[in-house]
Length: 477
Ligand SMILES: [Zn+2]
Ligand SMILES: [Zn+2]
Image (tube, rainbow, N blue to C red; front, side, top):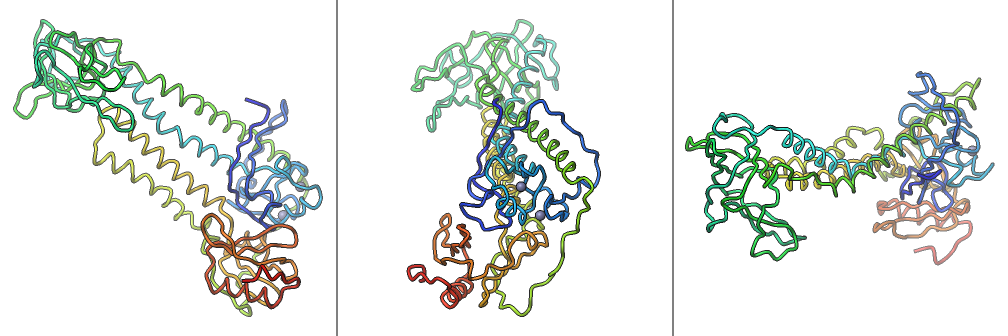
């Protein structure tokens, strides 16, 4: 691992200032995980620092999640709010190295990476423990096995089921996306070890190792295979009475010898580096967060913080407000975010319920579904935390465009009004695939409003036509 690890993400919560190319937190941002080496790691005492965090510039105290989302200024060595990031930019400029992501965003990015590999590693771990158990189980003579026991037998196949002699257990190739060998779950054959004979079924097998004989009809270059009468066989399973009262060995693992099947080493080889990377990144994020918190405390020593202003707590009734987005209150609606994050898990749950997986392959398919679910779930949380804060209402007056945000922290950090004198151009564009109203600001940045209602959009366009300081005909539609 290098001195510095940078993850690039396309989204970041934009607070304060005008979003656009000049805005640090918009567009491509970097998670800066590099830290001074060999520096002592402070362990700040628990206390009010955990429940709120104060902006190092304006000394306003942001409670809860808003405190967690303050950006880190590497020049000032303290956390700054969205409003004060502008000040930082004026004073010493901000770039990707001088500003740091909040630890909570870094943690979510690591979680996103983990979501891609965690479900597969669960399936791999399950397989590994299953195979360890299979290897650790001692062989039981068939003659002394009791119904209800989980046993491992070592014998010889003595009868075929419904196949042509001498085949006892076969399957078929599934050729679709790649080749898969599907063992015939309806097979039933007898195995004997000299002390007794038992019928074996593979209706709910977990894994069957490659048999000693190749499938004669093979078209895929995979070790698909068959078991014949007379082949030695090691079987691990439950001794049960079937519906007709006969004793059968319900096989979990079938193998020509005790050394197979082997764990999915390829799977581990792919998954392990990413798991190690996730652990490493988490440690670095935690260390960096502690270092920053210690530096922040040192910077703010002896300074008293101010409460977040609650005024104005209602919209000015004199302005012609029009409803725009509901999104600004997403952080307050943790329940919704939680619900949406939980929803994708319905997919593996339905699979579990409908398919009742038993074979190793089915567990891997389940892991694939769970990966998708984990990815969607983390994405929902990510979006809830990092999506751009949008005004819930806008008003157009001769002075400019007024914005109303649902949350006190957003009202403090974001502009309440953009005066027409700050607007250089108003035009229609596209953000993603959604038509958007785009304000070009004299500061050089842009502010875009995708999916804005027709009424608000027309009011802004009309306001711009009437109040434009520097009219640009091609910008007016
Ligand atoms: Zn501030
Ligand atoms: Zn600064």
